[in-house]
Image (cartoon, rainbow, N blue to C red; front, side, top):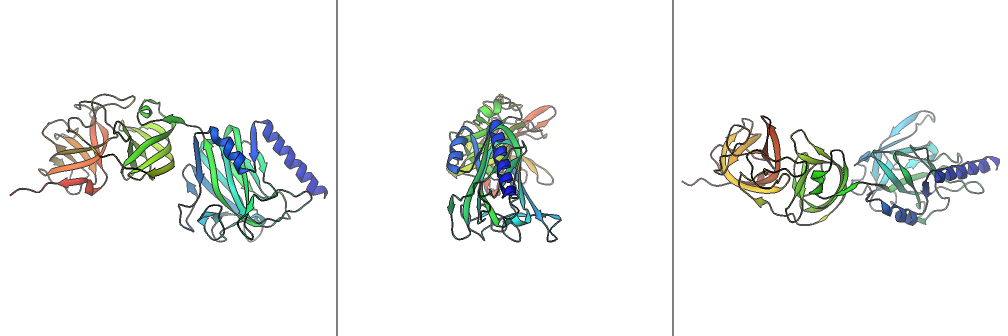
Length: 410
């Protein structure tokens, strides 16, 4: 009894110290959800997008590592976090478990560490298991610790039960200071031996709200929340988004955006080595059904635009408004093709400089084995590249179906 009383005293003291530093621990998810309303970036890792058994170590800005005791009871071994559907999840079909057992084992001193590449201010998760309370009063099963030194403890009574052996608990923190790491483990009571899964991991932070227009005027390194845009093209290393009225677009470096989906994303603004204003993707927050706006038809002289747009430079010999990032269509003759078919130039008679030595606009991507003299119509995302101290427009074609070759009349 003395050992258990001492442990409970330390738990209460740690909780009070956490509150004194402007941090609050939560075992009630409804209260937690209310208090994270102030954060404009909120994301839930549900593991439901993965197939059962898939590696769940890397989830956007979150890296998940796990470790526990080896069979000798002394050595520490690394565990692979996986999506598991073997045991009841908080939300179907998957929860987070460990390869082999499909669950984490408190009796093996299993510890799960969540590390974030950007600071966060709130973190929470659901725990599903069936630990039996020990001690009078009962000792909490789980402990959560951040890299700020905050320690929090779970409730001793479940929120609900999903069935025999599958009780549901919640543990979370909202902090006045940012943190980048959270450890979850269960060593509060050496007498407790149980297995558990983790589900619906929630993290929150702040970011500058931005549109595809305002994003081009914000300084490099600004973390933004971009919404109100639709994915227009998916490329090998990026996807492009634009407003429904086709007034502005921007490239997002990263994968996961699906064409024809309205998207909300968390990312960092940058100017890439080619001089293009882009967003380096951190996390896709949501995607919903939408209709991608059609490509904007224009002459090769207009591609890129001559004027700057915020920090986005315009293009040499281009005219009109800056359209870097937009989805466009051009029609013209192929005036040059790279020997490895990695690029070609297309001219509609404007005779503009392409930056390659041939007239027209440079085109890359899914262009196939084009030949000089072919008449083509193509759609793609407007980009740019430097040449001879100047910037020239570039169109990125995402798929071979986005290029049409007119038949030769005989």
